[in-house]
Image (cartoon, rainbow, N blue to C red):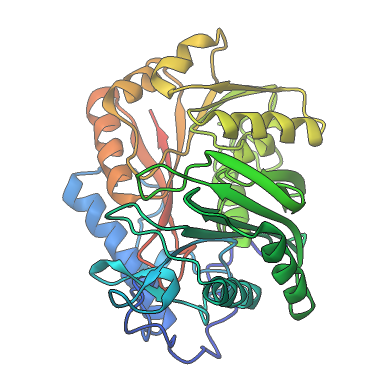
Length: 416
């Protein structure tokens, strides 16, 4: 396991050539920028957002500087999930499969040399695209809602070497499932990882998002296995799961290490034997790490499938002190009689709404550990908690878990 206190990265010495898709693909914004400059720019952006929103950083144990951002453990081949779209680069042109073009949402760029994913993703993408072109299948048109091919989703267990491949179509015409599965099995010998599941999802919703009206398992199973911090996780086809395993493992361990006892002892956590709320818990990854030492963990998540996965994974790991509740945090928090000693929140990009913050703060816990995928909404929530409830940021950390992209993760320990 990596040194979680190391802010450096192992892949800055020999950078790859600039991505061949750089001209059109909208997936990366820092192609051609030296990695150290990327990291510093993200750290500076976090600092600017905190100051512009009015977050009080005067109580930090150590001042936050842009150079303090944790660099990525690896800067290439780190993504364990990609959702590609079928389309064309020019109207009426040959079918493409990949990412939306910069500033042209209807144009799709084939990204079969992407540097953010394992090479197996690129090989599978190319094979699926060639199969669909050979079959003469039409792309699904997002404007007139006519066509067959919609999306390709690939998921990867980085610690287990398992690949889950899911093709998404409409039901407007026949899709040769047997031939598709055979084409993927023929590709297996070129891969370093193993395809353990081939799925066909039918989606007839008008929205651009993937919705599983019907899911067929063509080969294998509908989930893959992964490991984080020594725990095992079964990740189903549509469950949310962290995208960069080594990076998030470091973030989680660093974040939870901030919950120290008030006497400052270093040999124990500040949540041992206590009741912890893990709000916006997803599939319960953090919940289960907490449950290794906590008396009880209550996880709340709005996505029902994620809650079912959380329950199954807790059973898989032999953890009996986890309770998972499906529902919006604002409403579901009233469905437990437990009173938390510690609260951990890991909300979506939109942050936490004031009405939910009011309920969270009403418990009066001395500390709130806030894990954020959006520094802007984190800053806004910090300001709300400091102005109305007297919380102050005591530790602020930034993590570049997604090199070349615009995204930055943050951890903030708030204390009364």
